Image (cartoon, rainbow, N blue to C red; front, top):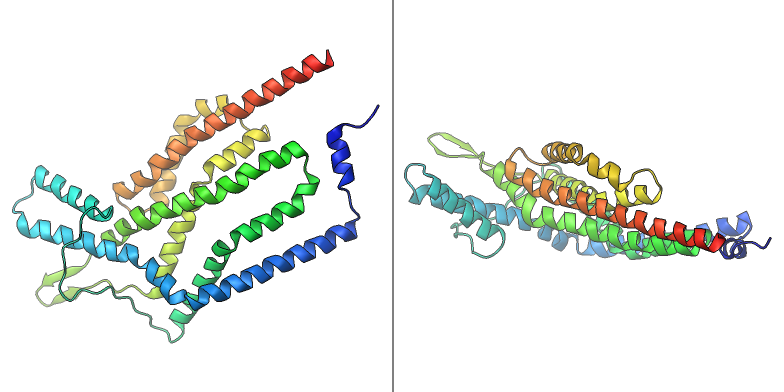
Length: 307
């Protein structure tokens, strides 16, 4: 009995262990060099990159100015006034309206250790290098593992290699443009200003601000990997669409709990995370269903060929 074409394909790509180790070393060298070059590029522009990370802080200051303006113009609390204030804040958040000018107001962060800002820029450059060189790193990983995969497995692997960074970028964009401004607005709204003899102002440290930004970016980016994870589990046969649909209520509760943990204690940011993740969950169910449908068609075609 002759070997299957896919087995012949794997056999043709077989190589001695030493050759694999040599190839692994060369690809690791390429990855290290790429990361080093990316780090240098990001470190040169680290001040500009950190300035970009301050955009949510500027938007939060605008939201605070809108809230202060609404408080001055309004008298007693009323529902229409609250809704109008929420609408104005949303317009400022989305860039459809300019925030009220605040005379003398500047975005101010501090650092209390001599090298604190330097090490913050080093960490920022390291993360920026990973993001900048991700195409090179992904290509090297794929080129190393591809010879050990069947042709159909390589075709199945490529979409995930593209979908994963795209979904991560979507989650990071939601943090940058939506969640983080609300987080910082909530923090700034805790200030005590205008009380006689008392002033409590928000002056975040650059390291703590950087840690907050990166934590939220990673948290949301990883949460947006849900379709990739569930689809891979479906391809491995560990979950199926019927199982996922029957447990959708538990999944919704789990998403809400996770959103409550990793977002600030306000319902808006929790909703902004929960709704997309729940939508991605049902998209994942559809992807798993399509995989099952394709697998069933392949099994039926194989049975017909054998018969």
